[in-house]
Length: 378
Image 1: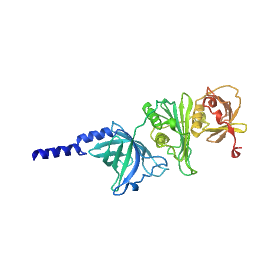
Image 2: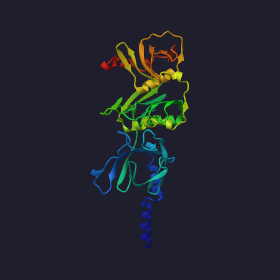
Image 3: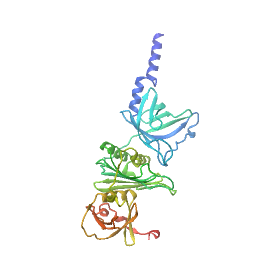
Image 4: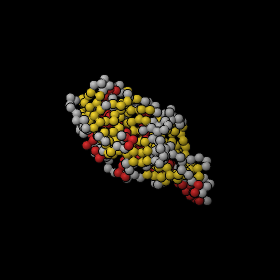
C-alpha cells in the first residue's frame, strides 16, 4: 500500500504544473515571439470564439519573451486613452513564471497581471484571460533573411481627420535621432537626441521580422480621412525602400516595427534644435519640371530636409532644372535645384546654395516618378 501511495505521489509531482520541473520547462518554452490568435470563450463552442479588438486596424497583440526576465508587449503601455494627453510608457516590461502562472508587469497601472497557463508548448501559449475567456497565442518562428545594415530608418505620420499625431522621426546607426513633431504630439517642435547601438539594432531586427522582401510598397484602407504612415529605409546613402501604410492595413510585424518609432520622443531625452535657420526647409512635397511632378513620400521629404540641414553652403551657379514645392514654418519657400545643388531664398531675403554632394534624384531612382500633373495640381 505504501508503494502504491508513493507511485501516485511521484506521478502527481511530475505532472503538477507547480513542480520545479514544469516551472523550468515553462521558462524554456516561453522564450521567443508570440502572436495573438483568438479569444476562446469558456463553456461555449469553438464557433463562439472571438478576436480581441486590436489597438489599430491591422495590428494584433503579441509578446516577445527573453531569457533575461524582460518581455515586450507589442502594443505598448499608455497612461490613459485620451490621444491628446496620452503618455507612452514603452513596450518593454518584466515578466516571471510562478508555478502555473505567468506574471507580466503592467507599466500603466504598476501591477502584475496574472494569467494561469493552461497550455504551453513549442507552438501554442494558452492563458486564462478572465472568468469567461481564455486567450491563445501562436509561436512565431521567423526565418530571418541576412541582415540589411541600414544607415537610417525614417518614419513619418501624416495625421488624420482628428487628433492623429503629425510627426517625423529619423533614427541613425550612428545613434543620432532627429524628431520633428508638428501637431497633436506631446512635444511639438524640432529636436535631436541619442540612442544606443543596441537600440538601433533592435529596431532593425523588427523590420527583418516583417520580411521586407515580401512587403508591398503600399497598404491602403478603403475609407478616407485616416492616418498615413510612411517608412523610408536608407542604406549606403540611398533610399533602399519606402513603404506606405494608410489606415493601419500593413502586416502585423510591420506595425510592430514602426509603431515604437512614432512615439520615441516620449522615451528619449530631447535637445531643442535652436539653429532653425539650417532647417528652414521642413518639407519638400515635390519637384516640378514644366507640366510634370516628382512626388516625395513624407518620410522621403523629411530625409531630404535633414540632408539639406547639414549640407555645405557653396558659391555655385545652379542650373534651375526643377522648382521645389518647399515649405517651412512661415509657409511656402522659393527654391530651385538640379538635383544636387539647391538654391534657396532664406528668411532674410537672400539666396543660399546648398550642395548635397550628389544628385538626390538620380541616386534614389526618383526620375522614374516624373509624371504629368493632374488637373487639381495645375
